[in-house]
Figure 1 (cartoon, rainbow, N blue to C red):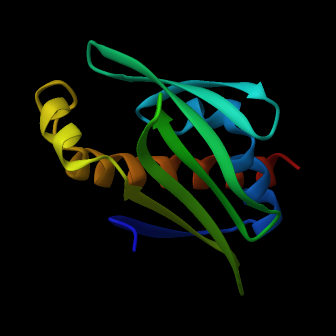
Figure 2: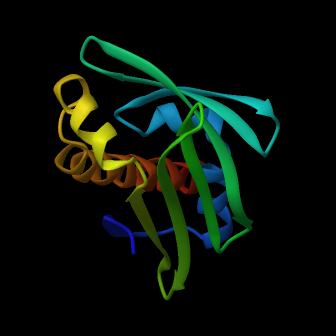
Length: 148
């Protein structure tokens, strides 16, 4: 079960939303925390560059689900330590698509406590981050449709 899940309705197709989300180097356009992503193995493994205030860090990611128009998910780890799973699903609706973003915390409990003074409590930060990401993603998808 994910720790957090939020959905948003978007006036765009599941395929177009999948295309945006799966283009991970663009994630910095809508995420308030991820500043950029660089592929180490195109379409499979990547490095995420992140920032909150003055704190900057990087993580390693691996795509674990890539079902065009349906689902895109990736796991995050730091070295051998599992950090999280980010999952996006796309459901067709009468007016376009519902996008659901989910976060599952995979950090060992001791790591959560050790990193809390530096990174804060991830849950409320990720509630805000998921909401912001979905709103920005919606704006990008709908703006692209209007430009066509």
